[in-house]
Length: 323
Image (cartoon, rainbow, N blue to C red; front, side):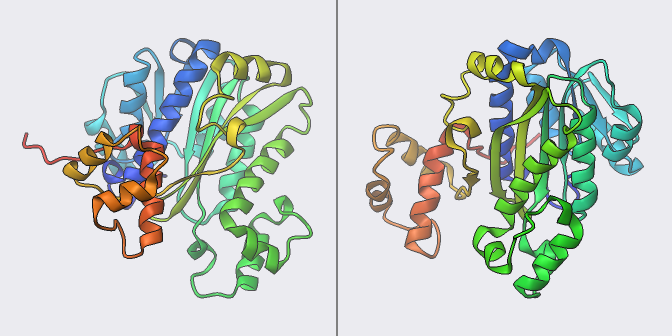
């Protein structure tokens, strides 16, 4: 399950990922009726933050929280943001295998941590194969090299990855290609290939990626959100939702969005926002105006500033509050 180690609330990069997810659902709502016809199924962690966010956007959206650990479930119930949540004492694997409804549409977020990739991808494939169409499916994976052995050689890392997901990797994947492409890009393509494989007996069905995001959290994470539907539904849904014009859409960029935001004080953020959007393309000028770097290296600092400009509207500001 997700959210076992660090505070779910104090992760600015993950917060942006969640907000982009909510924005995406808002865009497809006109085509699919997310708030009226779907059920959200998630792994809310201790703080249930995604349940809070989606309830604000879709007040009538039915919700199910999956958690097999009793103490975590008790804490979730205490922190629940509203009463319209059904708590199930199950793992995601149990729910998919035993309780995945074939008669209702879902938004499902498999928010995984750790290195048990074979099981995680298998769950995703079962979900793709069994979910009612159209549905919105989302998977988060740990793509840090440490999950393949922190001090091992590239060959040893590749051998370990092949032992986990060999049937979904290109047969010609060499050590050199593994190093050049990186684990993040390789696992992104694994998810795409896994979805296609899961639908091989359903030729009229398709999993269309809509949002692909990577970010530094406790580890490096990759999140892929896609539309599961019949092939003839994909284009009408995409067109009505305006996803080809949405700056963050996979359909527009066909690239993974990298979220690497700087930690900013309220004063720094205010100063930045006063220069936007007029000077959004003049990152070096804004950088010099600041008079200091946001990290130890100038180039890295400029890159973080550019990343902030890209996601400024979704940047969360945390503050101390006495209750």
